[in-house]
Length: 332
Ligand code: ATP
Ligand code: SF4
Ligand code: MG
Image (cartoon, rainbow, N blue to C red; front, side, top):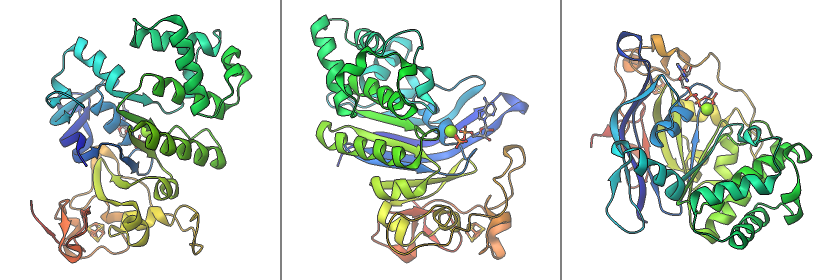
Protein backbone atom coordinates (compact mmCIF):
# COMPACT_ATOMS: atom_id res chain seq x y z
CA UNK A 1 0.00 0.00 0.00
CA UNK A 2 1.00 3.60 -0.57
CA UNK A 3 2.35 5.88 2.13
CA UNK A 4 0.04 8.66 3.32
CA UNK A 5 2.23 10.34 5.92
CA UNK A 6 5.97 9.82 6.29
CA UNK A 7 7.61 11.13 9.44
CA UNK A 8 11.41 11.24 9.21
CA UNK A 9 13.94 12.08 11.91
CA UNK A 10 11.44 14.24 13.75
CA UNK A 11 12.72 16.15 16.82
CA UNK A 12 10.40 18.23 18.99
CA UNK A 13 11.55 20.50 21.83
CA UNK A 14 9.76 22.42 24.54
CA UNK A 15 11.54 25.72 24.96
CA UNK A 16 14.52 27.21 23.18
CA UNK A 17 18.28 27.23 23.64
CA UNK A 18 19.59 26.09 27.02
CA UNK A 19 16.07 25.81 28.40
CA UNK A 20 14.96 23.36 25.71
CA UNK A 21 13.99 19.82 26.58
CA UNK A 22 13.65 17.30 23.76
CA UNK A 23 10.34 15.46 24.06
CA UNK A 24 10.43 13.67 20.68
CA UNK A 25 13.75 12.30 19.43
CA UNK A 26 14.58 11.22 15.91
CA UNK A 27 11.20 9.61 15.24
CA UNK A 28 10.60 7.76 11.98
CA UNK A 29 7.09 6.50 11.31
CA UNK A 30 5.08 5.92 8.13
CA UNK A 31 1.31 5.65 8.01
CA UNK A 32 0.00 4.00 4.86
CA UNK A 33 -3.34 4.58 3.15
CA UNK A 34 -6.19 2.80 4.87
CA UNK A 35 -4.01 1.63 7.73
CA UNK A 36 -4.72 1.77 11.48
CA UNK A 37 -1.51 2.50 13.35
CA UNK A 38 -1.43 2.39 17.14
CA UNK A 39 0.98 4.48 19.21
CA UNK A 40 1.51 3.29 22.76
CA UNK A 41 3.72 4.24 25.68
CA UNK A 42 3.50 5.39 29.27
CA UNK A 43 2.48 8.90 30.25
CA UNK A 44 5.10 11.43 29.20
CA UNK A 45 6.65 9.25 26.50
CA UNK A 46 5.92 11.91 23.85
CA UNK A 47 2.84 10.51 22.07
CA UNK A 48 0.81 13.73 22.05
CA UNK A 49 3.90 15.80 21.31
CA UNK A 50 4.52 13.66 18.23
CA UNK A 51 0.90 13.99 17.04
CA UNK A 52 0.80 17.75 17.56
CA UNK A 53 4.25 18.24 16.04
CA UNK A 54 3.20 16.36 12.92
CA UNK A 55 0.04 18.46 12.49
CA UNK A 56 1.71 21.73 13.55
CA UNK A 57 -0.64 22.10 16.49
CA UNK A 58 2.07 22.19 19.16
CA UNK A 59 1.19 24.53 22.00
CA UNK A 60 3.99 26.97 22.92
CA UNK A 61 6.76 26.57 23.93
CA UNK A 62 6.76 23.48 21.70
CA UNK A 63 8.84 23.68 18.52
CA UNK A 64 9.73 21.18 15.83
CA UNK A 65 13.51 21.22 15.97
CA UNK A 66 14.25 18.97 13.02
CA UNK A 67 13.07 16.34 10.57
CA UNK A 68 10.39 16.19 7.90
CA UNK A 69 6.74 15.19 7.60
CA UNK A 70 5.84 14.28 4.03
CA UNK A 71 2.18 14.10 3.12
CA UNK A 72 1.07 12.23 0.00
CA UNK A 73 -2.29 13.60 -1.22
CA UNK A 74 -4.64 11.37 -3.25
CA UNK A 75 -3.88 13.50 -6.29
CA UNK A 76 -0.93 15.81 -6.68
CA UNK A 77 2.66 15.85 -5.52
CA UNK A 78 3.79 15.00 -1.99
CA UNK A 79 4.69 17.98 0.19
CA UNK A 80 6.35 18.71 3.54
CA UNK A 81 3.74 19.63 6.16
CA UNK A 82 6.43 21.43 8.16
CA UNK A 83 6.95 24.01 5.40
CA UNK A 84 3.29 24.85 4.69
CA UNK A 85 2.25 28.48 5.19
CA UNK A 86 -0.78 29.35 7.32
CA UNK A 87 -3.36 29.23 4.53
CA UNK A 88 -2.05 25.90 3.23
CA UNK A 89 -1.92 24.55 6.75
CA UNK A 90 -5.55 25.40 7.42
CA UNK A 91 -6.54 23.55 4.25
CA UNK A 92 -4.38 20.58 5.19
CA UNK A 93 -6.05 20.33 8.59
CA UNK A 94 -9.56 20.46 7.26
CA UNK A 95 -9.23 18.36 4.17
CA UNK A 96 -6.50 15.91 5.01
CA UNK A 97 -6.14 15.38 8.73
CA UNK A 98 -8.54 15.56 11.66
CA UNK A 99 -7.45 15.26 15.26
CA UNK A 100 -9.70 14.21 18.10
CA UNK A 101 -7.88 15.51 21.15
CA UNK A 102 -7.36 13.95 24.52
CA UNK A 103 -10.53 14.85 26.43
CA UNK A 104 -12.09 16.30 23.28
CA UNK A 105 -15.57 15.62 24.58
CA UNK A 106 -15.10 18.49 26.99
CA UNK A 107 -14.44 20.89 24.13
CA UNK A 108 -18.05 20.85 22.94
CA UNK A 109 -19.63 24.20 23.67
CA UNK A 110 -22.13 23.64 26.50
CA UNK A 111 -24.50 26.42 25.43
CA UNK A 112 -25.10 25.20 21.87
CA UNK A 113 -27.01 22.19 20.67
CA UNK A 114 -25.02 19.48 18.91
CA UNK A 115 -26.49 20.32 15.49
CA UNK A 116 -25.26 23.93 15.55
CA UNK A 117 -21.75 22.82 16.41
CA UNK A 118 -21.64 20.17 13.71
CA UNK A 119 -23.11 22.52 11.09
CA UNK A 120 -20.53 25.18 11.93
CA UNK A 121 -17.69 22.72 11.54
CA UNK A 122 -18.99 21.50 8.18
CA UNK A 123 -19.72 25.05 7.00
CA UNK A 124 -16.22 26.22 7.85
CA UNK A 125 -14.83 23.29 5.90
CA UNK A 126 -17.16 23.39 2.87
CA UNK A 127 -18.72 26.86 2.62
CA UNK A 128 -20.36 25.94 -0.71
CA UNK A 129 -22.54 23.18 0.75
CA UNK A 130 -26.29 23.89 1.01
CA UNK A 131 -27.98 23.85 4.42
CA UNK A 132 -29.90 20.71 3.50
CA UNK A 133 -26.66 18.98 2.49
CA UNK A 134 -25.03 20.03 5.76
CA UNK A 135 -27.89 18.65 7.81
CA UNK A 136 -27.79 15.43 5.82
CA UNK A 137 -24.03 15.12 6.38
CA UNK A 138 -24.36 15.77 10.12
CA UNK A 139 -27.09 13.14 10.46
CA UNK A 140 -25.13 10.61 8.45
CA UNK A 141 -22.03 11.10 10.60
CA UNK A 142 -23.98 10.75 13.85
CA UNK A 143 -25.51 7.54 12.55
CA UNK A 144 -22.06 6.27 11.62
CA UNK A 145 -20.83 6.73 15.16
CA UNK A 146 -23.92 5.06 16.56
CA UNK A 147 -25.89 8.06 17.79
CA UNK A 148 -29.58 8.52 16.95
CA UNK A 149 -30.35 11.45 14.61
CA UNK A 150 -32.68 13.09 17.09
CA UNK A 151 -29.72 13.62 19.40
CA UNK A 152 -28.73 16.48 17.10
CA UNK A 153 -31.26 18.48 19.07
CA UNK A 154 -29.52 17.74 22.36
CA UNK A 155 -27.23 19.96 24.40
CA UNK A 156 -23.85 18.43 25.33
CA UNK A 157 -24.82 17.96 28.98
CA UNK A 158 -27.73 15.78 27.89
CA UNK A 159 -25.29 13.23 26.45
CA UNK A 160 -23.04 10.80 28.28
CA UNK A 161 -19.25 11.22 28.12
CA UNK A 162 -19.02 8.38 25.61
CA UNK A 163 -21.69 9.92 23.40
CA UNK A 164 -20.00 13.32 23.50
CA UNK A 165 -16.75 11.70 22.47
CA UNK A 166 -18.52 9.97 19.60
CA UNK A 167 -20.03 13.30 18.53
CA UNK A 168 -16.47 14.66 18.34
CA UNK A 169 -15.46 11.72 16.20
CA UNK A 170 -18.52 12.30 14.00
CA UNK A 171 -17.49 15.94 13.60
CA UNK A 172 -13.98 14.92 12.63
CA UNK A 173 -15.31 12.41 10.08
CA UNK A 174 -17.81 14.94 8.68
CA UNK A 175 -14.84 16.76 7.19
CA UNK A 176 -13.95 13.57 5.31
CA UNK A 177 -10.26 13.55 6.20
CA UNK A 178 -7.68 11.11 4.83
CA UNK A 179 -6.14 10.67 8.26
CA UNK A 180 -7.88 10.66 11.62
CA UNK A 181 -5.64 11.06 14.64
CA UNK A 182 -7.22 10.03 17.92
CA UNK A 183 -5.19 11.11 20.89
CA UNK A 184 -6.32 9.03 23.83
CA UNK A 185 -9.93 9.70 23.14
CA UNK A 186 -10.69 7.08 25.70
CA UNK A 187 -9.06 8.03 29.00
CA UNK A 188 -12.30 9.32 30.45
CA UNK A 189 -14.39 6.44 29.21
CA UNK A 190 -14.89 3.00 30.56
CA UNK A 191 -13.19 0.02 28.96
CA UNK A 192 -16.34 -1.18 27.20
CA UNK A 193 -16.83 2.24 25.64
CA UNK A 194 -13.19 2.44 24.58
CA UNK A 195 -13.48 -0.83 22.71
CA UNK A 196 -16.76 0.20 21.08
CA UNK A 197 -15.36 3.47 19.79
CA UNK A 198 -12.17 2.02 18.41
CA UNK A 199 -14.15 -0.88 16.90
CA UNK A 200 -16.51 1.54 15.20
CA UNK A 201 -13.65 3.59 13.87
CA UNK A 202 -11.97 0.54 12.38
CA UNK A 203 -15.22 -0.51 10.73
CA UNK A 204 -15.75 2.99 9.31
CA UNK A 205 -12.19 3.00 8.11
CA UNK A 206 -13.01 -0.02 5.97
CA UNK A 207 -16.04 1.72 4.45
CA UNK A 208 -14.68 5.24 4.08
CA UNK A 209 -11.05 4.38 3.45
CA UNK A 210 -9.26 6.78 5.79
CA UNK A 211 -6.18 5.99 7.87
CA UNK A 212 -6.08 6.14 11.66
CA UNK A 213 -3.34 6.99 14.13
CA UNK A 214 -4.67 5.87 17.50
CA UNK A 215 -2.81 6.96 20.63
CA UNK A 216 -3.35 5.26 23.96
CA UNK A 217 -1.67 3.73 27.00
CA UNK A 218 -3.70 0.59 26.50
CA UNK A 219 -1.73 -1.79 24.35
CA UNK A 220 -4.37 -4.51 24.58
CA UNK A 221 -6.82 -2.31 22.64
CA UNK A 222 -4.24 -1.68 19.96
CA UNK A 223 -3.37 -5.34 19.67
CA UNK A 224 -6.98 -6.06 18.90
CA UNK A 225 -7.75 -3.23 16.49
CA UNK A 226 -4.66 -1.86 14.80
CA UNK A 227 -2.63 -3.16 11.88
CA UNK A 228 0.67 -1.94 13.23
CA UNK A 229 1.91 -0.68 16.57
CA UNK A 230 4.70 1.73 17.43
CA UNK A 231 5.93 1.86 21.02
CA UNK A 232 7.45 5.03 22.44
CA UNK A 233 9.75 5.42 25.39
CA UNK A 234 11.49 8.63 26.47
CA UNK A 235 10.58 10.40 23.21
CA UNK A 236 11.84 7.64 20.90
CA UNK A 237 10.15 4.83 19.07
CA UNK A 238 11.75 1.71 20.53
CA UNK A 239 9.79 -0.90 18.59
CA UNK A 240 7.46 -0.99 15.62
CA UNK A 241 5.79 -4.10 14.20
CA UNK A 242 2.55 -5.63 12.96
CA UNK A 243 0.18 -5.94 15.93
CA UNK A 244 0.29 -9.72 15.92
CA UNK A 245 4.10 -9.70 16.16
CA UNK A 246 4.04 -7.28 19.09
CA UNK A 247 1.49 -9.45 20.84
CA UNK A 248 3.10 -12.84 20.20
CA UNK A 249 6.70 -11.89 20.36
CA UNK A 250 7.56 -8.42 21.66
CA UNK A 251 11.30 -7.91 21.10
CA UNK A 252 11.92 -4.86 23.26
CA UNK A 253 11.78 -5.52 27.03
CA UNK A 254 9.73 -2.32 27.41
CA UNK A 255 7.11 -3.60 24.92
CA UNK A 256 6.98 -6.87 26.85
CA UNK A 257 6.51 -4.93 30.09
CA UNK A 258 3.71 -2.82 28.63
CA UNK A 259 1.94 -5.94 27.37
CA UNK A 260 2.07 -7.39 30.86
CA UNK A 261 0.53 -4.18 32.22
CA UNK A 262 -2.87 -4.77 30.61
CA UNK A 263 -5.30 -7.65 30.77
CA UNK A 264 -5.23 -9.75 27.61
CA UNK A 265 -8.50 -9.75 25.72
CA UNK A 266 -8.32 -13.33 24.63
CA UNK A 267 -6.04 -16.29 25.00
CA UNK A 268 -4.16 -17.12 28.13
CA UNK A 269 -4.40 -14.83 31.12
CA UNK A 270 -1.22 -12.93 31.66
CA UNK A 271 -0.14 -11.90 35.08
CA UNK A 272 -0.41 -8.13 35.41
CA UNK A 273 2.96 -7.12 36.67
CA UNK A 274 3.50 -3.71 35.15
CA UNK A 275 6.94 -2.16 34.85
CA UNK A 276 8.83 -1.27 38.00
CA UNK A 277 10.34 2.20 38.23
CA UNK A 278 9.18 5.31 36.46
CA UNK A 279 9.65 6.94 33.05
CA UNK A 280 12.82 9.00 32.54
CA UNK A 281 13.07 12.71 33.22
CA UNK A 282 13.61 14.62 29.97
CA UNK A 283 16.13 16.88 31.72
CA UNK A 284 18.28 13.97 32.77
CA UNK A 285 17.91 11.17 30.25
CA UNK A 286 19.89 8.05 31.16
CA UNK A 287 22.94 7.42 29.03
CA UNK A 288 22.96 4.58 26.51
CA UNK A 289 19.56 2.91 26.28
CA UNK A 290 17.21 5.22 28.18
CA UNK A 291 15.28 2.19 29.44
CA UNK A 292 18.34 0.60 31.07
CA UNK A 293 17.65 1.68 34.69
CA UNK A 294 14.36 -0.25 34.53
CA UNK A 295 15.30 -3.08 32.21
CA UNK A 296 15.37 -6.61 33.65
CA UNK A 297 17.56 -7.74 30.75
CA UNK A 298 20.18 -5.01 30.63
CA UNK A 299 23.73 -6.12 30.02
CA UNK A 300 27.18 -4.75 29.31
CA UNK A 301 26.68 -2.13 26.57
CA UNK A 302 23.24 -0.91 27.68
CA UNK A 303 24.22 1.96 29.97
CA UNK A 304 26.73 3.46 27.57
CA UNK A 305 25.71 2.78 23.98
CA UNK A 306 22.43 4.01 22.46
CA UNK A 307 20.75 1.18 20.54
CA UNK A 308 19.57 2.33 17.12
CA UNK A 309 16.17 1.45 15.67
CA UNK A 310 16.51 -0.98 12.77
CA UNK A 311 15.53 -4.34 11.33
CA UNK A 312 16.69 -7.03 13.75
CA UNK A 313 19.07 -9.64 12.30
CA UNK A 314 17.29 -12.39 14.26
CA UNK A 315 13.96 -11.62 12.52
CA UNK A 316 14.94 -11.09 8.91
CA UNK A 317 12.03 -10.91 6.52
CA UNK A 318 9.66 -9.51 9.15
CA UNK A 319 8.34 -5.97 8.69
CA UNK A 320 9.50 -4.87 12.10
CA UNK A 321 12.08 -2.68 13.78
CA UNK A 322 13.49 -2.53 17.29
CA UNK A 323 16.06 -0.51 19.24
CA UNK A 324 17.62 -2.89 21.77
CA UNK A 325 21.10 -4.43 22.14
CA UNK A 326 19.49 -7.86 22.59
CA UNK A 327 18.56 -7.68 18.91
CA UNK A 328 21.45 -6.41 16.80
CA UNK A 329 20.24 -4.63 13.69
CA UNK A 330 21.58 -4.11 10.25
CA UNK A 331 22.07 -0.40 9.80
CA UNK A 332 20.13 1.36 7.05
P1 ATP B 1 0.14 11.04 28.19
O1 ATP B 1 -0.03 9.57 27.95
O2 ATP B 1 0.12 11.39 29.64
O3 ATP B 1 -0.79 11.87 27.37
P2 ATP B 1 2.24 11.63 26.27
O4 ATP B 1 2.95 10.40 25.83
O5 ATP B 1 1.20 12.19 25.37
O6 ATP B 1 1.65 11.38 27.74
P3 ATP B 1 3.44 14.23 26.05
O7 ATP B 1 2.26 14.99 26.50
O8 ATP B 1 3.76 14.24 24.60
O9 ATP B 1 3.36 12.73 26.54
O10 ATP B 1 4.69 14.77 26.86
C1 ATP B 1 6.01 14.36 26.55
C2 ATP B 1 6.96 15.10 27.45
O11 ATP B 1 6.94 16.48 27.13
C3 ATP B 1 6.64 14.99 28.94
O12 ATP B 1 7.83 14.82 29.63
C4 ATP B 1 6.02 16.31 29.25
O13 ATP B 1 6.30 16.68 30.59
C5 ATP B 1 6.71 17.25 28.29
N1 ATP B 1 5.81 18.37 27.95
C6 ATP B 1 4.57 18.27 27.43
N2 ATP B 1 4.03 19.49 27.24
C7 ATP B 1 4.94 20.38 27.68
C8 ATP B 1 4.99 21.80 27.76
N3 ATP B 1 3.99 22.56 27.32
N4 ATP B 1 6.11 22.36 28.27
C9 ATP B 1 7.15 21.61 28.69
N5 ATP B 1 7.17 20.26 28.63
C10 ATP B 1 6.09 19.65 28.15
FE1 SF4 C 1 17.23 -3.51 28.02
FE2 SF4 C 1 19.64 -3.17 27.03
FE3 SF4 C 1 17.61 -3.68 25.39
FE4 SF4 C 1 17.80 -1.32 26.62
S1 SF4 C 1 19.21 -2.13 25.10
S2 SF4 C 1 15.99 -2.55 26.41
S3 SF4 C 1 18.67 -1.91 28.60
S4 SF4 C 1 18.45 -5.05 26.95
MG1 MG D 1 -0.81 12.59 25.58
